[in-house]
Length: 53
Image (cartoon, rainbow, N blue to C red):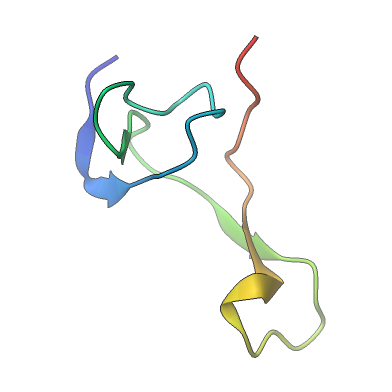
């Protein structure tokens, strides 16, 4: 898969990481939260994350 230069990613453990570059290979990602009222960056999650196998 090719990198999507619109989506940066530093999570090397994700299946969709572009390998040698800090980008995602998905066309779009889903960002969600585990909080009822998120107020900090730590409250958000990339719900598109999939652990490399």
